[in-house]
Image 1: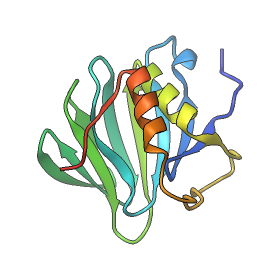
Image 2: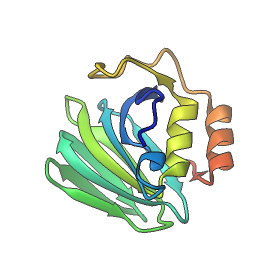
Image 3: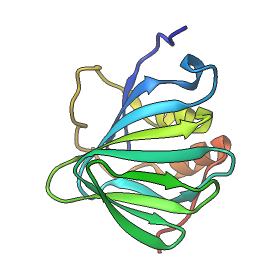
Length: 153
């Protein structure tokens, strides 16, 4: 059965289109397409029990995984080992597009949908952020969902 709620969200300056919520996949995984403007991404974080992988559709994203950096481009697959500290930042002049698989995905589903707000499914790029994120709220939601966000190096 397909979940009938909003499928597209703007969260922390990133556009997220949920192609599959965990509830759509017998609680096996979450599949999200993200549009990440240059300079934006995710701070260093880790989460045990929630496997994550990225598949690059367009653009460039620099990943940091357990202290090692890697530039990913169209066609690259970037797996994140369970519990590894990781971060990413879109590079270049245009937004990056990436498919993200989280398994089982409940943590990421809640984190992105609770912090973000729904937008029309036809939205192609996120609106610019209207100020800095509410760090206290980001940390609260991360902690409640089982994600640990670390300060940048």
